[in-house]
Length: 378
Image 1: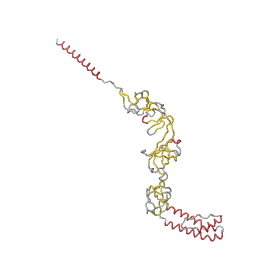
Image 2: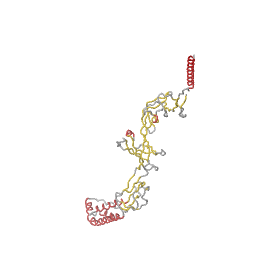
Image 3: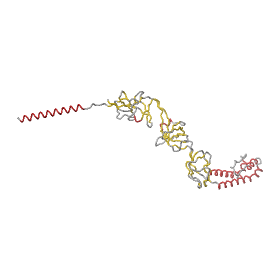
Image 4: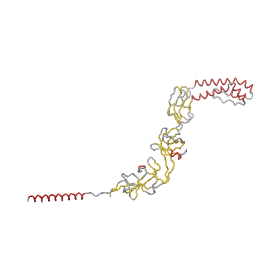
């Protein structure tokens, strides 16, 4: 009897456990939340193919177009001038930049002039006897002789006999000795070849200057030149005289320059040409770093997009009936942040901003032009 009771209790216990498990399973199924489908909002732009001008952006360091190093060919003590020989000093064209003591050489020049005057005077009596017809012009030259002035040009000879006579009296030898000394005396004074600033001064007043010594650097502050490198594929599109837009690094100032020279030699390592752009402005300084924008040509039936939108460099996402599709395109020209492409059709809706997790066939919804990017839950 007890055996039957144990069997019945076991059956009831198993049945109760089964009923409880089934009830618990049904309870879990009732509490499972419904799955929500996420549809992302995307910003789009309508494709409108146009003619897009291609502009090469490059950069370089500004240099003064006229810049010379000052050297001396003579020896002497550097004298004090009307202006200090110091970096930053401005000199007008023709103004004395520096002067070297030339007293000793000036005395030697006066000696040569005196010797020439004596030789010329000693020739006159014989000239009057042998060539009376040319005597007046030589007498006039002797009368106007001035020891304090530069030697005047000798009178022209009318015949070979007159020329031989003059040469035989050492007139030409003495004359050219004086002219040579006068030319050397002029080297004791260095004048500004153009209006500019002394950018570097390597000697001071009272310094002994020696021949061949570098004294400083003189630059023209009114005109500058920018050297930039351009890829050889655009060499045929660049022309001398083309206008160029230039900006500083902060893009707060802008200037207009002109292509003045193009070096025809290609750099073997970089395959680029050197292009020189001339510009003028008082605000410019040597050593400034400028960016140049050179227009080269225009691409017809093209569209410009952000480089960050490219997929594998040859595709772009477009929205067709709320579905993302990859459109094959051909990149034509890469700028720093944008790319000019061909292959898009007018009216296509191009994704304007990158979509995280985007893939072909993805369901999206075009966001209103003024709405922020977010997601819709359905």
